[in-house]
Amino acid sequence: MTRAARSASFLARSDPRLKVLILVLWSFLLALLETPKAALVGLGGSSLIYALSGPKQFFKDLTKLLAINAFLLFIWLLLPFSFSTPGTAIQRLGPLVVTQEGLDLSILLSLKALAITLGAMAITRASSVFELLAGAKGLGAPEKLLAIFQLMTRYISVIGQQYARLRQAMRVRGFQGRSDLRSLRAYANLAGYMLVGGLDRAERIHAAMICRGYNGRFWFRGDFKIKPLDLGFVCLILALGLGVTFLDD
Amino acid sequence: MTIESLIKLKGLVYSYPGRAAVLNGVDFELGSEGLVGLIGPNGCGKTTLLKIIMGLLKPQAGLVTILGQDCLEEKHFRPLRPKMGFVFQDANDQLFCPTVADDLAFGPLNLGASRQEADRIAQEVLDKLGLSDFGPRVTYDLSGGEKKLVALGTALALNPRLLILDEPTNFLDLEAVARLEAILLELRLPGIIVSHDRGFLAKMTQKSYCLEKGRLTEA
Image (cartoon, rainbow over all chains, first blue to last red; front, side, top):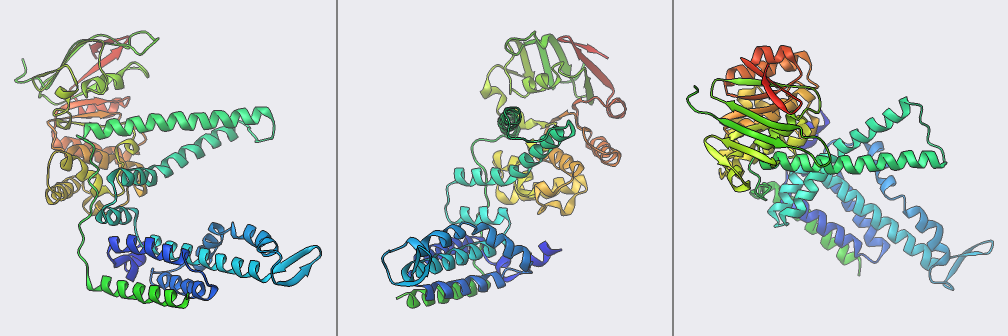
């Protein structure tokens, strides 16, 4: 249901090539910003892109966003106290000094990280793997790289299921992970089995491809036509991009 | 006796390193009479035999002849493989594309079809399988039975002369097996079915062979 509704959204209907291009350019642009003001507007821009990506699950998406950005926690634990000392001290916490410079940098980094991940999340959630592949192909990305990406997205769930099955098989035989040598050995066996099993599967997949006449080509689609809707998307991104660039001066 | 032999095996010997020979002088001939069954205990070399027929393994001795062509090396097998629709035991090994339509188009594109032709063939195969609206479906969202049918479809998209099915009913529920049976009966393609499912073989094949202790005998 959500998938059908999502595929009707503005972002889902725009050209896959455009989406890949905008994903890359918008992320780079945001990464290069130097003032919190511009980064805040960038976050607004990403929110706008998110708004165009179809039905939302705010809580779920917010959790995902914060989980991806968990590393920001370390920045907030370290940077305000350590960056550019002795700088302009604004607060003392015992032996620690919070500097204006450190605080500004932490805010800037957080805003940028959130804006980039939110933008990327919005664009990818409104596209299928197939579309992202086709879009990248349309932009001239090398087929080998796309093949790796395609096979990874296809088989990560298969490998995950195998891992879950093995873990269950260990559990039904009474295995409980402890921090002793026996548990470590069991985990090592599990990892070894996953590796060997993965290699075997890769060989079978390759054999199956050969049986269908595989000769090195993956045949990604990459034929698209720009629609009026896409021009709207380009204009929107141009406006946002120029906006944050000017603000950043 | 037969008009034309599709597959002919003579004196095949194969052993994996450090183990006794799994195939020890196997002779076999598949005419155009229909599907034949291949049975035998686990690990007896059924899949090995199929892999040798497909040219995926090289026998230590013996001769493989496919559609009248003696196959001695890779270059002999290459043009013949698409003529033998091979369906793997695990459909996850066969379906590697993000969507069903892409997977079905992969074979025809390899054989030189244009994008439009390949898409048309993919749709024809889906219609034949009764999965007409499955084209845009994402492969890993399919059920086990649907995956199996699509895997069969990837072989059919090559327009093969014969089918080679490795345990096609594994992990399928009764309904999915019935559907597979109906499709195979309608296709009327000759070929080999490896299976432990005696009921399925009885319905699908006229004749079965048993592979045991390196030898192939009529069962």
